[in-house]
Length: 211
Image 1: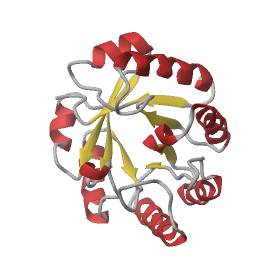
Image 2: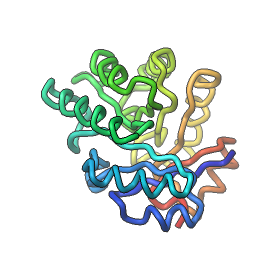
Image 3: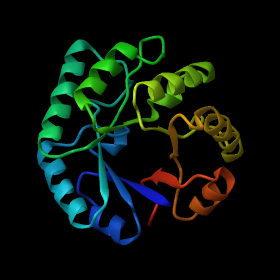
Image 4: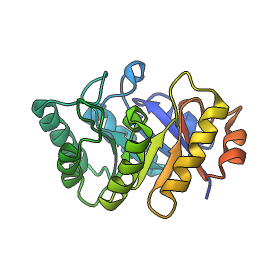
């Protein structure tokens, strides 16, 4: 089944996106800094709207913008947000953590995954901060530890679309049979058909994915 995942800032455009064909919503706040955890009230209302329309909701857990290296205090805040969101019915989380030398932070990830329990987990675009060999190791580690998919733009912001497609194919090959790769970053309603054709995937992510 083909899924267009719409990245929604708070409650803005959720209904419009679903009406336009979004099959899944990623909910966040502060898109200007790449997305942070929305308030519990926003999450609750978004759950209500998506459930009414039989659309899945994923909630980002990120305490601030900037890098993905978190202090113990920030990790505790993330754990608290996960638990609070689970209490009101959230069953899918988008998160990620790196070490100061830009490796996958396995210690923090294990804490976050334990808090998520049986919920679906997506590793977000912190993945794009990893070196290629570290991405391959992360694919294996995340798949072994029950993460469902990886959201990635497959390259830097400056990379050409051709370069990104080449890297997507490498990632898709490495992840085959292990974990889903969710392409995102610069995917629009105008070019989504090109992404589908070039990559052979069944899901895409973006803020302009359906309108």
